[in-house]
Image (cartoon, rainbow, N blue to C red; front, side, top):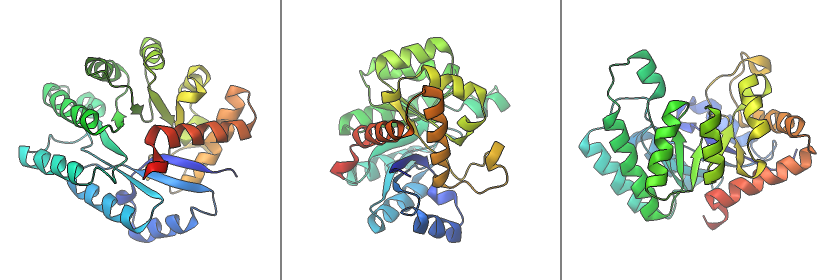
Length: 260
């Protein structure tokens, strides 16, 4: 196994015992770093603390969009935290728009979420940080509008799913996407991998989110991304060593990991 990075994992959502076991196994599976994303202020603080204890953990801080809008005080506290630890935080995230929340409840207003996202996009631009985005299908077009409005290119659309017109727009703008282990069995994701440039691609688990296919019944572990790399190699028709090397370089360069 070649070195690889899990570009999107929620460490705070694992049970403590399993999280410790998982971290102890990273070297065995050639996982050099984890981009540990946050859902709220509490998880941001946890990720920052863990990053101080383990240099392999690289924290991203933000409010996950699939929840109620945070209070003004919470937004202020998060903004202050990001400024305070800007030299340790590798990205702003996970931020984006509440696609699944609005599917379940169409009455949920979008404007407050757009306003919140724009706040953190501007903060990311101010601090020269990339953004980790939760934005799929029609929401991705709205996010592209905001990124273009503010002339931002360091955008990582995690576990992306979307329309061909959006995909073309994202490719042209230089945005990155990442795929999860569901690429092993999901035809939609396999089609996306075939058409998205390899030099704008990364891999993730979104752990502890559970998967089907060969991973059914298993706790999500960063080691699963090796299966993703094998599938990407097959779909791209390139040697697996080339895929490992390009994905690793993409992630190191995008997140400027060597500077932290």
